[in-house]
Length: 274
Image (cartoon, rainbow, N blue to C red; front, side):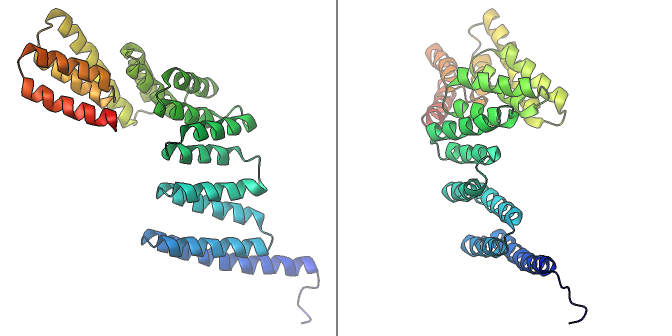
């Protein structure tokens, strides 16, 4: 007792440290349960950890655990639950722009695009220089098939951070969907300049170069069905189903390679509806 600390603040810090150790144990169990697919048990352990930290007034740890929980919920496609976790963070930290962007991503996955736009714009209102926020908003507009607005958001992200590989790649995808393959190729090349290991950009660049090459071939020999089928396949890879369908219908009209063209038409129509 004689060597015990006398200051109340020291005792408070000791109590906080003990509580944090107990919370870390709950977090460890939560991660183990999560990896085993025992989601209910994992969420219960994370909740216990949060309550322990709340009781000791450890706001920083509460936020960290909530972020970990929300991220895990998003990855597991529990989007409503993830939204709830992010909103709990906003309840005590309403200026956390990243939480608004994360909630926007959740609504995007739920295909609730108006809500996704609303939350992304709220986040950008708090952090108007967020390249990530503009990239997310562009992605939402992309999914919404609002290509011009999507292009504008990706361009804003690139204006803020010119070396933003994902935004350059996404802008290339949109140029391809709009049929501007030269611009698309330039964006994919720029992405590879930023990150030479960006495999999707390398693959897309190959597809764009293939499309440009085949378009040239078809100008010289418009009856080349093999070229049209290759072109349709490259367009399909970009989810450009309308242009792919047009090429396949041209093959069907020719009366040759009809069975293969109709098979690919079915695939295009299926994914277009989906």
